[in-house]
Image (cartoon, one colour):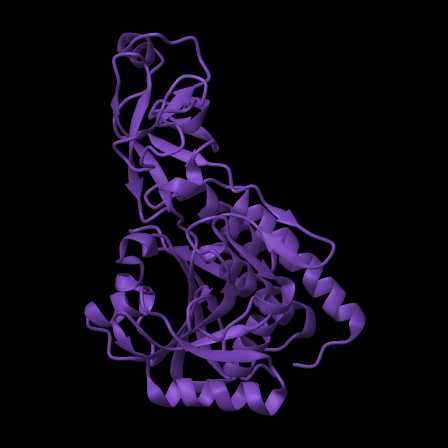
Length: 350
């Protein structure tokens, strides 16, 4: 849909606010109540009906102009994270990964520890050889689960001191997303995978509210909460077609940049629907949307979970190009705009 300069400025303002809101909520897989509540509040304020599934997905129903088909768009709001595995004798927290964070990038990151009693403590993720003035292997020790731990910002000297705080195995450790939007339009943050796409979907809802446009068919916008561990899409509403909106990959022999929407032809689970991919490419070409078509070698999405669960639907995947995925990620507002524009064209908004 063509946008005036003023409309585009308003859309960008809503997008960045929605993205900051989502990124401001700690939400590793299994600990997503707060981010879903935040997204639900945005959708309801825009006037859309919402419901939650038993597993915690947020489903936003948008009536269509025509009957006969049902369409789905999905993005995920669960992120990577850590969980307390054990407490050392000297009061450090050993951790296990939730999803697949790139652990070497977490060395030195500030974090929050959430106990089951509702207490929140701060800390720092560190190598177990954290000082060049003390340890010979400070620069060379492996940065993995066996060699990294959390230093708690409390006066603890023993395992018993930590236990007295109420911290125990199974507590979530959430590290700082460090979100920045630069004057040049770059969005730097952890967890752009996939809160950038979720913000795009919420902004499409805002766009429909502002313009009065509706999709051609009844559409379920779903924000899933178990994608990072492989089963987020397993209980999506039954649809004829599903468009997953998730981060696009950058690097190696891939052609996508941070300024484009990526159309995935195939990932580690196999090819996406040929007809849908071809239609998306045609729409992008005809309407001047900056795009790239790529194959993601180490990637899976909610579509894979949908298909493995047995849903009989066609499905495709698009998303903004994101650099340094599962590490210190970056994209650009241009890529987010292109993603929203292609998704709007797919929905045949009018």
